[in-house]
Image (cartoon, rainbow, N blue to C red; front, side, top):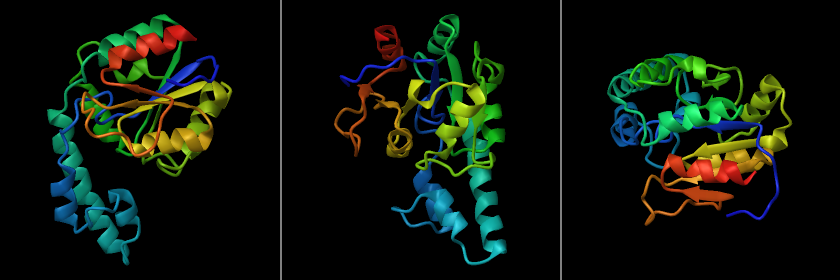
Length: 205
């Protein structure tokens, strides 16, 4: 737990594996299908394809995988209750994801008590901003929400989430989804195993 003092005006969430249960998208099979090396992020691999045709083909395959995953995705444990709680506390909410906006909209149709209208902004790879781990999306969120960047909290289940938050100078929460044997590659301010634990963090401030 961090010893830094701060106030929370807004919470930014990663999407896949954070607000949704992990594992809906088979990244290993996706990378194999598009020829992406195991240790290379998908979006960066696509961006560096030598021709426009190759980039378009790899992106189309990626979107096909995402579409299937979106249809099969489920809310993560405690996600819907947490979103409702944070809204009741007057905290602004955002999604910051490397996914497409279309896949996020489709996935949210599988939520019973939460819709895209519950979020004050959604930043995806379709947004004209560098994706995580770049901090640009965090800064954009602060501007659009009209809050000081230091009063943002970012929650995610992957190292890129933590890196983006740290690069922006904000507090970060790593969600390990109960997989405590696989520590995050970099230290976050907080670490939780279930989204419901985020309430305790918010109540501290």
